[in-house]
Image 1 (cartoon, one colour):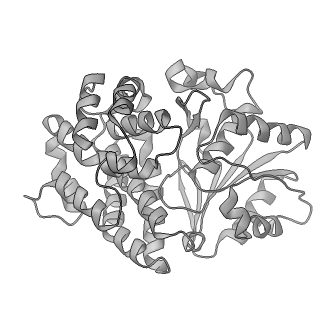
Image 2 (tube, rainbow, N blue to C red):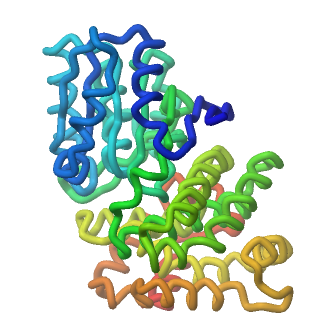
Image 3 (cartoon, rainbow, N blue to C red):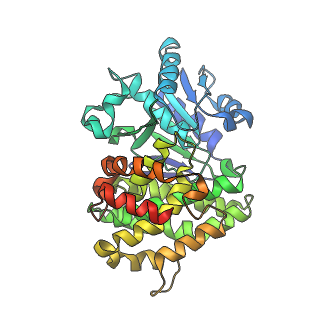
Length: 377
């Protein structure tokens, strides 16, 4: 059976996408879906495939100009298509940016005012109501977890990244078909895979009390650690692809518990550089240093993390993750990604203000982030 229910409805099986699209759009009674996607899905013919799978009476519309990092301008452009075409549901198709943009469009077409007013650090969580149009999420990468997560991120013109956060942003349905990730190149597989692995680690050590999420995070970490090198080394290995998509889902489901300093620093650095930096690669570089910083507060939980990763009890967890990052071909230092000291100085106070900093197990201030980023430099 391909159906999973935990926070949302998830179809998970090889080759399930066509059947699930037909069934779920029909179940919603939707007749005018807006499909929000990006170039890779468009160029591969996947957009046409999804359109062909829609129920016979459905007429679809598309926004296929998702930026590398979703922006308010893109959200408003897609929202205009939604309103002018009298759409009745949204299908997010593609990478994490496309799925995040789809969530932002849902807010834009159902809520009043600027999207910036719904940012988590502006008190926007309470302003998002359960009036969003139904969203079906179809990921083509395994890592961001946006298909089952309760957040989305947008880039402002000034480079600031804002987080939209609400239980109502969890997609109504996620359709996870591992075969859709087979075309992902090795570098993208590595970056998104480390994003999934980081989600599992950060949620497990976050301050919130959520035992079910802890178990889900550890299981996701076990799958990611055992399969990320296989997926990067042989992209056609469907077993490895399936396990990485499962790890991504686990990380997304555990996100209800909150993230931490890795994502706070990653969001800040990515914003300063106007999305030229890979979020997954930033996570991979920063994670060992954040684990060292957090050790005084939660080192007692590192034993379970090491066990899930197949490491010996006395293994150096930060060193093991740094070695894994290098084995899959990702940058080892921030400077290798083009980050300079001025960027670090500008990003440190932004990281302290990021909403994910609130659930980091050790209080991190701007000076702490500056020290951590310099160590990773």
